[in-house]
Length: 450
Image (cartoon, rainbow, N blue to C red):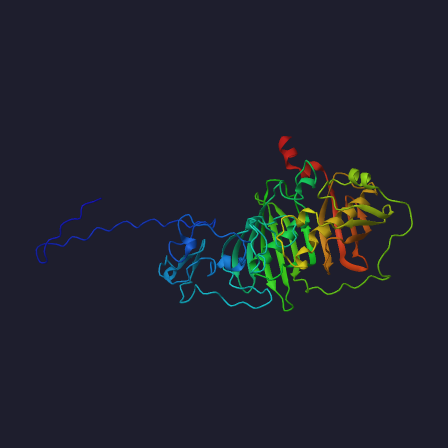
């Protein structure tokens, strides 16, 4: 440390200037959500961790904001320590926010509208919290599920903007150990396209703080541009806009960690009452017509590149090769999507995930496509368009998929159809486009080995 020079008395010689202490380098801001400001709440303590999303009584929107109820101090100390034009807030530097009362929550609207979501990082370790007041049975909170879901489709969320449109980044690393993944293309880990739709559902449900989980109401369009292989980190840039009828219009563009575009999706999410009844196709419920029997269960295993628990076709009820197929899928309460659910949940939480209904329809279309002898290579989903859902499908239901080939073109197939639960039409598919790709273009490890 340099000694401070002695200054002469006033009027006795020149006055030496005081030495200027060099500026302290700016302290970097952590973006992983583990540490925030030095002051302004428990989230800023050294080594502090964000509480797990999905814990009992937790609100994902308030978690992103660091609001009272999550052991965050609602005092004003966080407003006093300014850095430049802004202050440290959560895990991000937010400029021009030093306002009196800035720590208070913003009022939201009832019915699952956006409430108090602010920029920051949310680590998703569970599902929607159960209703308050439910007794604790001792099960770890992070192991509970409060609605049926095929997997934890979101690793973390980074909120970018809270209004008027909700913008956030969604991250998911393709993990071969996730439920259902072990049976999807055994030996070649690929993330199913429908799990991207499930990720949008889970992330939006977490952020809007809805009383009931949101569900797919409509898939307006979805394009799958590149395979998502095991170990890839997928980033979705998402914009969600609340509509006047209580739904959420969600658009997303996905990229791999290497910058390759993988998906472009536009869906509509809503609660259980958001979608009305679908118009019944002409002629009412389509029953299997008499004709030649289709593949049995062993032949289904030979033809489809999926295994348990991802095999979602149980039986072929009617088969017209190259033109039309009717398949059956029985929904069982022992499926992986129902494992780990908490006790005492309402019946609405056992609604079969609509992403799995669409996957089952897609597997039925692959069975029909393979009968044309035009599919060579790995069959993958290329696009969805105008898919609509309604009604609740619960354990014990027997789904019937009716699939028609509309067009065959080179290595692509265009199909459409409906899905029935008894005499109820629960899904209509305007267009599903399948593509057959050489394995070397799907499996990047083969390209690296060569």
